[in-house]
Length: 423
Ligand code: PGA
Ligand code: ZN
Image (cartoon, rainbow, N blue to C red; front, side):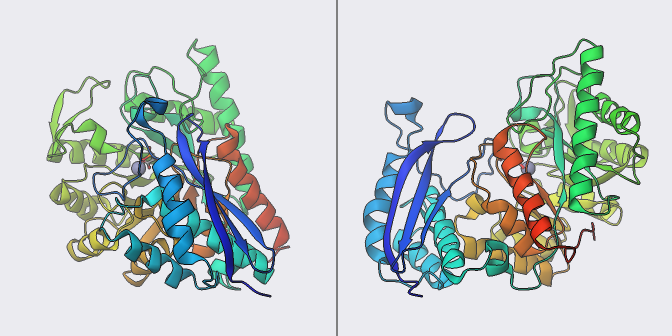
């Protein structure tokens, strides 16, 4: 088996929103071929690694021909002959080639596509499934699917402030059943919305995007759907929220505007108290980005108040970057970090971010982006990282379903040796 890299190339493809993204190809000396496609976010954190976009007349400036060209020339030249099983070495070589802190030179989209395709090629060449190649033989835990059934914020054109309302089937005996719980509830939710004359069209991540009067109404309608689907809220299934609070705070400074809920301007403390009322009242198990990325103090207060009850996840505030996660661990800003491969730009750095969380006793929550492709790398990666839960959208839109289907396949392949548990 000769796992040396023979060729690397890339093309421009479209993501689930119809925006350009990078698809990378790797071929090894032994004939192995792999392909990987890069996702793209909409509600991005300020400190994310840079997605290189052309900024010219094509696709409203969103073309990625520069990034593709960087793969086809600079990256390809540097990596030909390298051994694909040396993931860390390869990723750090690309980081060095880029030479910037945020990958703005070559583009995180150029680097990540190659990083993922290298991992896939090495797994194929070693004849090991990707989840085992990245996670070792102990990688048997299938994540609880946190299904985003109701979309708002920057992911939908409706009147809901919070970006994501997720169903968490932690009471299911296995992934297959958990997926059934949430998919059934998704269909019941659709019927409820329809009966009330509300829109059942979907947002970017495949959840419904009705016009509702408040975040509370969104939570209550989801609880109604759980019950009507014959599941017990809080026992079979709980709720996870992503406020994506950056979008509630135009200056990112600790002043918030729950525009659609008609609550007017709230200070960080007022929003934290209001959140506490909802945590008391509803079966909320996880809350992501309850405050904006610059509101480190507010985040800490939130975690101090509610962190023993729920998982408090930092997304935009940490951006999968160890520099910010370590600050968060030091200041007890949260008790979990969202892990998005393209926020940091390499497989190795994502694994290192997971390791940092694990060592601190934090949880970590594996995540897709709102702009996705049919690539299922995330499903294998989530099993490999043993994180216990992931979010990859709703029970609609094939770019989301592809990941769930890959997880069903992995669970099936593990033939009863798989695990499924929230903690
Ligand atoms: P994004 O949304 O991919 O648009 O950033 C996902 C999230 O905020 O978690
Ligand atoms: Zn988020």
